[in-house]
Image (cartoon, rainbow, N blue to C red; front, side, top):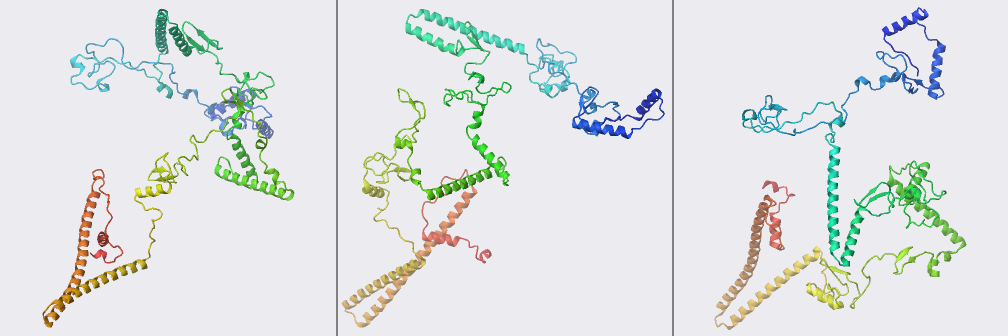
Length: 603
């Protein structure tokens, strides 16, 4: 990149004229090939960094990698030296805003309000700072211009500033810090005076009371009160004033120990003062290395705690798998990575187990691997546990926490099962006697039978569920029932015939009368059987008609309820508590529309 002047023709002509007067040349000299080659070499050297960069008019370096069209200034800019000033904001185009420190008042003016209307004021409210069309007060029935009373106060006129985005939204513009500070100091002074008066009053009361117990209680209360204002008298970096009872913390407190003060040994962990980091444990290889007493374990402690190591292992596994040709990434597809890692661990464990089994199969020694641990064999361990006088663990591993606060597998009152082994109808009980009363005595099988009888359930010995029957068996059963009905009718008819024959023998009438009576009796018996059949069919038809009427009424009520609003529908209006009879089911089937019937749409 080299600088080439880009001037208007008039400037080029003036420059050539001046040069002609100085050197006496008639024509401008063209650039030779050697000069052009030197410029190219200088440009390459600048890009490679072996030659110093080009300077602008302010002495700043120009990046040699900037393209020519960016570095080249336009002809109307009129630059004769290398520059990037045309790429920067021009000073005449930078807007000038009012500084944020400029403050102004808003709202109504303080002081006396005008008592009569002034010329040029608002005709509605009487304020001098706006006109009637800009008035924000409610329009009066008779304006202040005509009444001359109830003149509104004037407002502060806000000066016109050209403000930036932040200046227009500066909420602290009218805030007076000095006034706020005076208010805070005054409030604090009043609080201190009230405390001092309360202290003097308590001292006078303590002098009047001669009881030593009262004095002790007063001193304890004073100590507790002092605790809120001064936690420690000899705390470093604090200024304690006894008169005002205040504490000023200008340095760190005792708990905020610096990292480099944990261990003053020169050979301990390195502390970087620039980043204020100490990566290693400063108390390593000391008596305070135990994690229970450790307050600071180094900045790398977090990297080796929790799941950070597992995450690092997963990342290492992803890198190794990617090198072997598996496209996997920890952040892009963590689920796939986890599944692959589990499969890898499973295969690795299977391979190790197969190698172990082959070695044991070849050389033996399985009995040595199945030996119990040394803690059980020797009845002692290397775990250090320190106890106090009360028996609590001071240092070391504590006892395992109890999983449940209730005793488990405790059988009392002759029960063979625990409470809660039996459940029915939302109640718990004992499975051995079906008792729902806790701490009751076990009654065994007798209790089960009594409990079942109380719930109207058959006992386990007599309860036999009916097996489901096939359609053929049900048909045969119906045929048998019809045959039984026929036999009963035949028996009734024969019984009636016998009675009639006995009556015939007792009668003294002749054969003609007897024959006529027998024929009449036989006809009456046949008519009676037919009447029985007819009455049974009529009764069935009557019940079906009643069921149809009832079904029709039910459908009407349902349509009426469904057309009502849900909030106005009566309570429990959709519940049926009785099972439908055979006649009702037959009526429902008759009323039901058969969509598969091709003639259904014609009616």
